[in-house]
Length: 228
Image 1 (cartoon, one colour):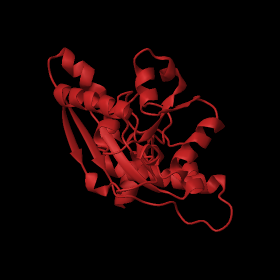
Image 2 (cartoon, one colour; image 1 turned 180 degrees about the vertical axis):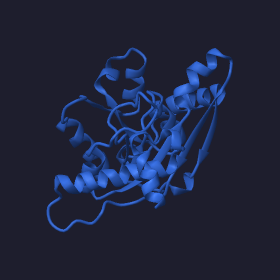
Image 3 (tube, helix red, strand yellow; image 1 turned 60 degrees about the vertical axis):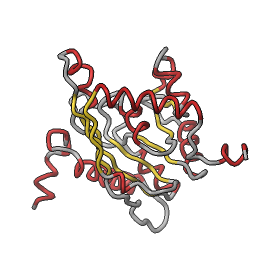
Image 4 (tube, one colour; image 1 turned 90 degrees about the horizontal axis):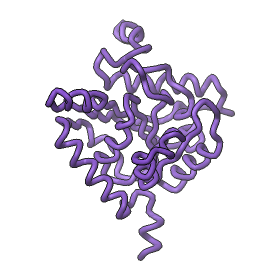
């Protein structure tokens, strides 16, 4: 029985359950949490969850909402943080060296997907300093093509205002919206950089569709194009 539990990539371990319970309780006490679209989540992996990136609270927020264990990417610097580091390691985070192609992290991510797990990441690569979407990077597209898995978009807003709102004795409104799953565009032959870039843009437009206009960032100009 023990081997069966360990082999299930979606199983919630003791430490994961504990961290998830505590963090979830804090989110619900310190903010007004609203969740939409959970019915879009497939019952089983493997698949990718792609989200916008506003704050270091993004990953803990999703961890408390998703009903199963989800591996996430985190910057290498957070692995050394006295509080965030142990938390991230307890939920099996994959630490990434920013600004370079981290092949070790990519191999770990592909192994998660090949084992039937769920992996969450931000296509933007880094946290937005403006609140709006940044230009997407090809990491999510690369993983999708090389693993053949589906992607589930999710837009998270309001978590970046939790601490500032608490200083004013208010609870920030935090919204999490999941969209329908979608798959990589079919490609005949070898996947090229052009294919990755094209699918990256598609991924970002799925996020645009879930976000309020003020969060569209560099993709704001595409709103009028879509309307046309």
